Amino acid sequence: MRATTLRRVFAGLALALAAGAAPAADAPVLLPGARQFDMASEATGQRYRIFVSEPDAPPPPAGYPMLVVLDGNAAFPVAAFLARSVAARREVTGHPPVLVVGVGYPGEADFDVPARRRDYTVGVGERGHAGQEGGAERFLDFIERELKPRIAGRHRLDARRQALFGHSFGGLLVLHAALTRPASFSTFLASSPSIWWNGRRVLDGLDGALALPAAALPRLQISVGALEDEPPPGRLSPETRALLAQRPMVGEARSLAARLQAQPSWQGRVAFHEFAGENHGWVWLPALSRGMQFFLDQPDAPAPAGRDKDRS
Image 1 (cartoon, helix red, strand yellow):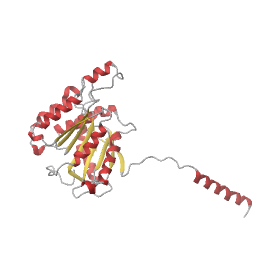
Image 2 (spheres, one colour; image 1 turned 30 degrees about the horizontal axis):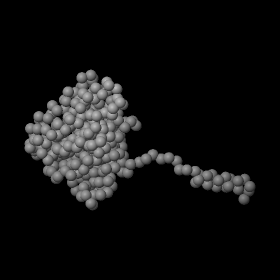
Image 3 (cartoon, helix red, strand yellow; image 1 turned 90 degrees about the horizontal axis):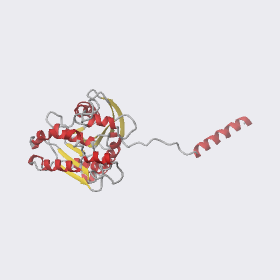
Image 4 (cartoon, helix red, strand yellow; image 1 turned 45 degrees about the vertical axis):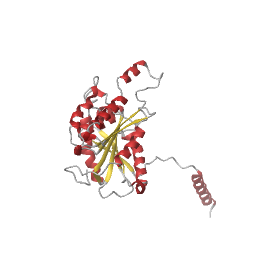
């Protein structure tokens, strides 16, 4: 073998050894069983990033229960972990594996503040503008008429077991849907709902919900952090503290839950949690965890009228 050839061989071996000794390149973190896609909505004229976590277990005979979480960029990874935990312990708990769908927005931010204000609020606020607020009805149309059929076309779903979770403005939207579209989900999970928004406009649907027969009612969890109306002293300006005082969270949530629980038709369907030691920024985590349990503890119910029992 000529010297030139030997040099090439040794050079190749050196490169191979160096490559083997080099540290592995960083790789993106992947969630097990999860994927995402972007979806344009005719109802809202906006684009959404949809996250889906499918269990690795086959669907039950009735199909997967489905949990839809708002603010999907932030909430989806947590909800997907909870669902994987449920699936891993299903032989002990008897709970079926859950399909999780996160509804978020394109981009890297955990929360798209202008977009969620546009999509999650009911009516236009005192200082707001049409198109920038008050899009709740259009957004709910998107979920019901566009998103649900698309997910159902890819996965076998249980129409009797579908839940919607949201926090803050998302909780406001969930509460609005529970009072005005009670058949759209079997369970509604409203975390720290902004009931104060727009002169408590969300409560306009309360009388209609109270008049519904028990058979037409969903299950509703309302939760709030015990410290939400007690901002840390010395950290906020007097103007900010005055603004927060006009936006009470704890008393409004507690009062609404009590009013619903006092109605014979709603008894046994409403859960209220006031999480000790939790503020507005963190409380959605225990609310989501407790909400998953509340959702899966749902008793069997007949399939909604006009829907196939295995599809939504």
